[in-house]
Length: 77
Image (cartoon, rainbow, N blue to C red; front, side, top):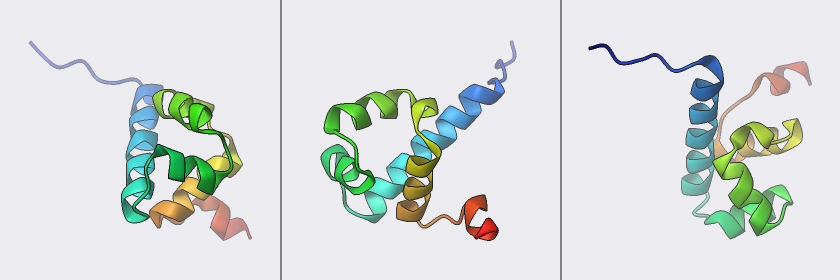
């Protein structure tokens, strides 16, 4: 019996969850601290952590910065 492959969206969602965890760990933040850093409420960050596809580009860029990742937006600037 083979393990079913994840679809593209599910893989990207998992990548976002890892990015969130890295941003929190690198900056010693909990959900409240992360929410404050990216300018959203605690309830919003809790919802978006469960549904990472709902993050806006600007929030994603802040998460990348907090996690120490250089995203493609940095090359455009």
